[in-house]
Image (tube, rainbow, N blue to C red; front, side, top):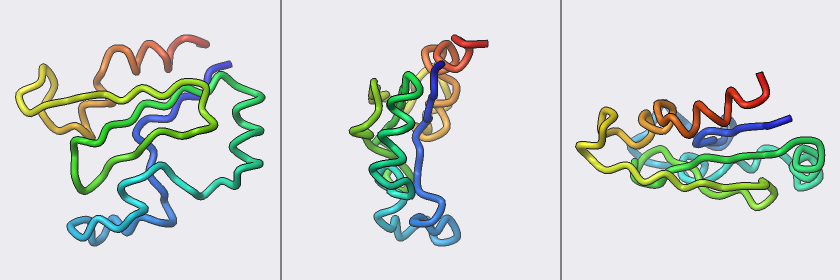
Amino acid sequence: MNFVTIDPISPTGCNIGNILQSPPGCTQAPTDFTAAQKNTLALRTNWVNFYQTNFPQLHSSAIEEADSNFKNEYEPGSPFNGNAHDDIARDPAVLEEILKDL
């Protein structure tokens, strides 16, 4: 079974209400799960993590425990809307991973 994370950020470490300040929880993969929880996820699933770093206020990073990490590079004027955080969800490669096990 695939477990896919798409540009995940920390719901407890990122204050979306004040996104212009970019607290650390908004610019790194979530630390909400313990190492043991992440290792359990990795053992029970094929964990595929997609992330981007081109949107300065809200982006994730690689997750060490994931089986695969894919950094998506979106530039302004991409075939999507040019916003790296939003474009990652429109990427056909991401959609393909999500639909693999259905």
